Length: 420
Image (cartoon, rainbow, N blue to C red; front, side, top):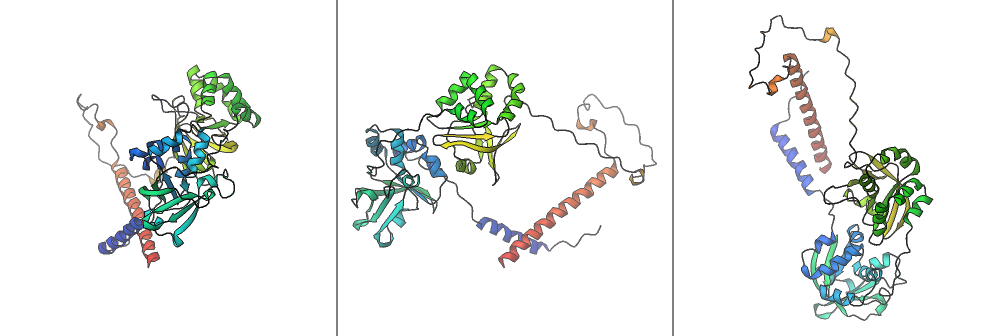
């Protein structure tokens, strides 16, 4: 086999350097996490806490081109002193999330001195008419004022300073106090009581629901998680019915853990599941055993993966904050309770024809001396390789490396040509 002459080292270095430069300069996406952005300034700990408690943090994290108008602990204490329900507090705080990007520079360069921005309160559909919009006004003397649209132009809240942010993605600023809104502050009823097992039973997951009802510890864990946020994954009837023999062989604590493994202690809508690929804790997670699985979105479907099995989300039974219920096509089996099955060994390759085998050497090999006691545990105990095999391996390695190098060079040239 003849190999083409290698590319000149100077040309190769130029191509590879150019390709590396393109990779460095290529744009990358920047995911943000509002709770981390607000973790360092201690004056905003209460605001940050309630973003998480109301699940607004999850909604903020999945959006881009957004501005969070934070208030300090003193302003939050004034709000909490009114003893509003958590659902009303959520409406009020959602009015402080603008669906546009405003950093300090843009606030002082507003076209015509005023701008009207939609908010998360408006986007949820909870705000009637224009109540979910906020006016931003660049005032004289360097001040910037904020006023809900329902306040008829009365401005009583002002920009204080910029806090954190990612350019053109998310801006976190401080405003002087809570935005006043009678609509957002109106009493908000909580969600109707969710009959978790009833919904499951009525939509093809009766076997799983009945098993959950029969386990008082697991059912209690699910019920206690409803108010704070819950995502449940229920295997379809045929799937769980076929799994019952394995389930019955588990210990009492194992049965509880397996059922709780099908619940996540936060509300996750389908868009949130698709955008939150990675490891997810479950109701069974504790300080000793992880009991977690991996959520993965391949663009067409969302799957839940453990070391033992991969389950596919097949349907949505309920998706109303703070509870969502999805059907899956397999029972989630945690590695803490089950062992992965050993892979089936591949069939042995057919023996090569005798004509292709290398000829044996005519020289007789000397009988190897018995290994000493010190050498008996060394890797040399394995049979020596035939020199012909070593040569074949070496040649294979050369062919493999050259193929990879060729692919790299072609890719690099294509990048350069596309730029030129």
